[in-house]
Image (tube, one colour):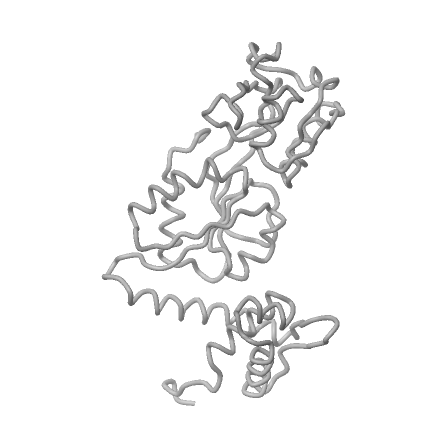
Length: 307
């Protein structure tokens, strides 16, 4: 076939196949793309006929799975679709101007620290880049980077599904949060053993919960968990009310809870290893120019705890 001859398949067929592979069922892909299930099914069938290979196994009760050939086609299709999107967006702006979407994933407890300076500064520098935010814990990031639904993410440096590329932004050790009128509040530090008989308000969202419990395990202490919540602000709010103490990594400048009750931050003695905060992005395909610019901008900011 001549290099200028168009292939017999279309980008739409490829996009339908990729979406169906990501979602696991034709119905879910149809809901995501706002098209009929029959349209997606027929597009995949036409693609299989054109390529002369079976790409999927479709069972009504078990959804859709890829054959080995289908997995290879999906991987190549991701690159083709990314390149076609870049061709489209590159024509919208002046030469050198960054234009188009970047979807940012962020661990929820990092969002108040990471997102304000990032969105404000990068938004001023590149006003035609559309920044979309997805707050998600590490376990919910699985597949989203690889599928291209998230371009870049800000996470703790613990295990993240897949093998993304990464760069460290900063690192902070965990600290103890107590109510402002707690007798410990006037101290600069506290040993975990001193908290064994106190009530813990546990930030129960992976990997924060695992990290907190590992600190106690290393100190030979079994914490007494009174309440489990899924946001750092909820931890600080309950601590401010005097319902227990908390273990957090992020250090808000505001010395009060959401309700205005004073809280105090204490270092853990002996000092515990710091927790790294990383920016990660997919290993493939290559990030767009605007995504690369956002990564470099994030790495240039004066984050707290940065060496």
